[in-house]
Amino acid sequence: MKRFAAPALGLAISALSTLALAQTADPARLSLGFLKFTVSDLPAMQAFYQKAFGMEVQKHLENPGNTEVILTNPKGMDLALVHYKDGRKVALGTANGPIGFYLQDVDSAYKRAMAAGGVSRSAPGGGPGVRVAIVADPEGHEIELLHLD
Image 1 (tube, rainbow, N blue to C red):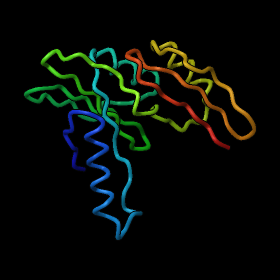
Image 2: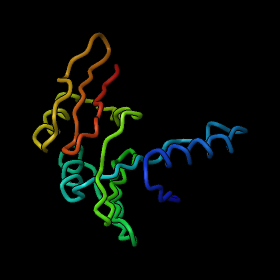
Image 3: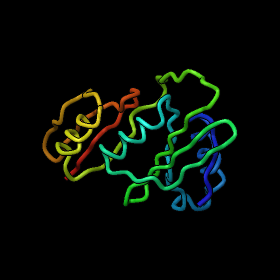
């Protein structure tokens, strides 16, 4: 599977949009393959996603300007964590929403995320047919934990 080396989430989304337009004859072929977060503390963020969500390292890339760790889960969703070597400051924007994980057990995932250093934004709750919680990873990226009946 080809990996795009986009320096920011916005560029990755732009690339996906371009790809989507190119595949308008068969939109069923397009699927989201990965999400990329720029992080300040790569070892800490890698440990968080491994401990909280059981993600495993698929690939570790040492590039001239950055280090990239690609984590994956059994369903095949990849999360690329990128740390730039030039020391640039990482700031969260307001144009994107949380990453979302579908889960069978929101409460257990929420507890694991808290134990791994996550921050609660919204404790598990919901209504008929839905259980949801929102946590933030140690650098503030929001994660929605969702179970739908």
